Image (tube, rainbow, N blue to C red; front, side, top):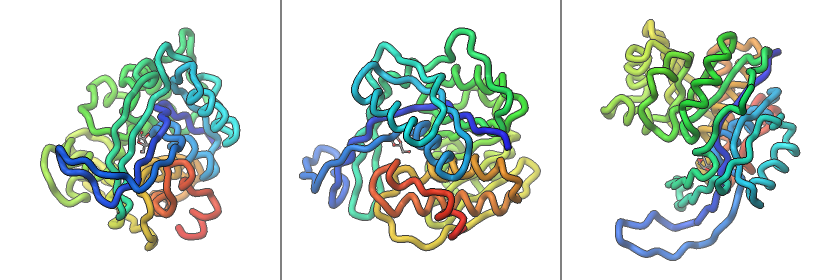
Length: 293
Ligand code: RIB
């Protein structure tokens, strides 16, 4: 079984619990505050290792307490973090507004994430089955990594939504994004399956669009779509649901499951990640995913 290599961000997440989101110009009082490990790259690496994958991570941290905490997290989770750089900038940070329905609004301050590059002389490992990246770190570093990983399935999570550089798209095999990000990329509102099909036809890549409680839609450029629905859950906090999906998808796709089963397991992981507050505390473990997927 090949391994999973994640390139991406680490953020220290500060979560403010609210009854509802503020309107522009409005001041609200929070119900409470909590701090968690976060960042889409780190979250996806943790999700993949908890789903049973063998995981390496390339990231950039500041020389500060948050950076040290990140390294302790990865060591505790069993993530290979030898290629993580220390940058001349503070560790990334995110402020997350969480409303009573478990929906969120996220603002990131990239810090060290913006300085991520491949270390001089870096050579990609030869046993990578799946490579995962997002858009919270520079596209140039992801492009350089993906270019050296021609034998792997190279997955780009288009989050936060942004235009994809042609050089990066040319070395990417699959795009994964949520319905909001898909609508931004497609520049129109539509059903998630239609957005997946349109983006697959436009990019000539496999495209998965995730759609919360509705599930996920995996479209191929030839027009074939498969879908999966999640188990019913009570949403406490949807932060990290997409990361749980990506990490589980990567881990289970190294194991020879059918595409349908892999998608169902990933959707289940995403749903389970909504049942607890905070990104990392809610990322589910393999046994729970297999039991409900
Ligand atoms: O996907 C959730 C993550 O987005 C949070 O952990 C936050 O840090 C931002 O990167």
